[in-house]
Length: 291
Image (cartoon, rainbow, N blue to C red; front, side, top):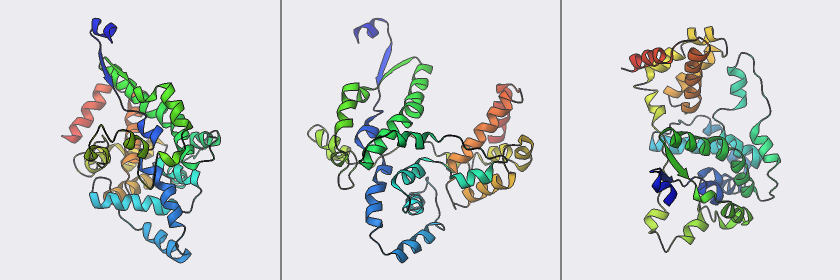
């Protein structure tokens, strides 16, 4: 620390890794609730599955977000544990991807490969191992490093100290997530240091209300970037399917935030790197639409 102080380098600490090592994500409860769900009569499960397909979904509405989570759970409750967990992580199913793309191509699935190498008989620990192989290096750590370095910050991740990681990997999952309580072990370990209102408060992310903006302030940007004419000219996706995804998102039939944002970003990238347009020119165009 003194070395960095002499060089006037700012150092920050990140909690990245705590959820993946000790079970902090809501998706880790999927197996817990699936076991209880499978005890219900078959006719009731089939009825619930049918109902789920017609539930509204919107992550930016308190009520509709609960329905979104219920919809996702019921749609995947009959799948195998690995497939169910994969469905929680994907932004859109392969069936819709095949329908969306003009020339569908499916390569090796990183999640399938990670599950094949996970090696844990314990289903929950398998999820932890998969996240350590995929989400941590390919998403959270990469984004943390890029954004901190962009503003000359030295970011440390103490929860990913190799000794702690090895210790956590050797622990049975049952003491990490217990009785539906996420991060049970970590919370118990810190119970004498932190008040219960901190330890047991509802988990909150850092995401922007992008899905809501796509229905309001950013609707003109969405309409321009993914208009039928633009999609047809780009030659990658079926314009009718893209239009349907936009329509269903606006009608709260499903939460299309992630897939629509991905399609928009791809179009912006294409304008700069395939069409050869100046990035400032593209940015000015989009700002004008959102004004």
